[in-house]
Amino acid sequence: MTRSAGGAKGFRVSRTARCYPGSLNDLDSPPAQLYGMGDPDLLARSTNGIVAIVGTREASSYGIRVALALGKAFSQAGAVVVSGMARGIDTAAHQGALAASGETIAVLGTGVDVPYPAANSALHRAVAASGLVLSESEPGRRAFKGCFPRRNRIIAALARLTIVVEAGHKSGALNTASQALELGRLVAAVPGPIDAPRAAGSNTLLRDGAHVIASVDDALALFGVSKAPAARPELGAAEAEVWDALQGGAMSVDAISAVTGVAIRDVLGSVAKLELLGLVAVAASGDVGRISFDQAGPGGYGKSAWGRPKPSVNGWLSGRNIKYTAAIMYILETSRIALWHKRLRIYFNAFSTAESALFQPRESRPSSR
Image (tube, rainbow, N blue to C red; front, side):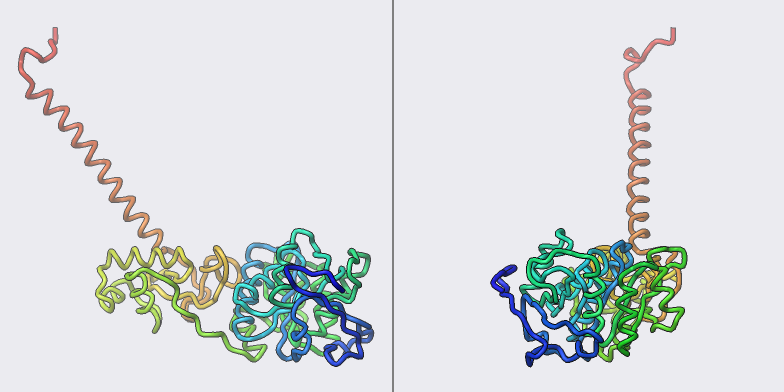
């Protein structure tokens, strides 16, 4: 194979080769050969270090956030993330791994040099450049009937744990989960709304006994790894002081001000900025705490495992509704000031007009006749 993607060279591995993944021999019909593009050393990784994250192509924004967060967290913990590079959940899982500068394997139903869907050409190049693109179909082969279930069995065999983030009743992710169960692998699923068709399949897996993934920590614990310590984000001086003060747990605004020496008004402003960044949440009681369910990506923070604004703050606010947020309070406060300023200006203008009319020379006053 001589084709390349993003500078990545292609290779072929027969079933008799030493680098052929032994886990694939657990299949009833292992691939006779594999074509790869990228880092061939990833084929030597033990199944114990590989996790599959799969799901629907028609993913919700919630599903995308969770897949991104899982891909990122597993990569930071040293695991290899494998998926099928389909749009939706698969794409998000790969992107999460790449965002953490981790290793990821994309298993294709098409030829290894044929991105599918075509819209994922950039992702295909990125995975080939820093991870591995894999397929049992010969180079140049386009999608054909039955190619994706064949692809799914490879994903299931490579990974020790398969996590279905979001899947409908007819999703190929259920096929992957089914094959993983037949191989004796771990299968888990992320709960979704009971009235959402795109989550009906994953919810059925949970009903039938799949492990429940209610947080990123749940997924890591099931796999036997721990979350990498998070570095403090780049913040301004006041925001950094507030962030550091919350390390030991949630606190009231008054307590934050007392600990940090930052004025309450500045604490409110800092909390507003931190919440807009998705780093903290405010409970109904008014206490501020760091968000412990790590949701990656734009808009990913401040959401509970069910996609509603019920974040888990330092583990003890899980499931509680947010009534007021620091951002809203800050906006209301500034709006109130602006409103009073506008009113005062109106009153001042009215007073000035009345004063001018009252004290102007008698001869210049308008006649009432």
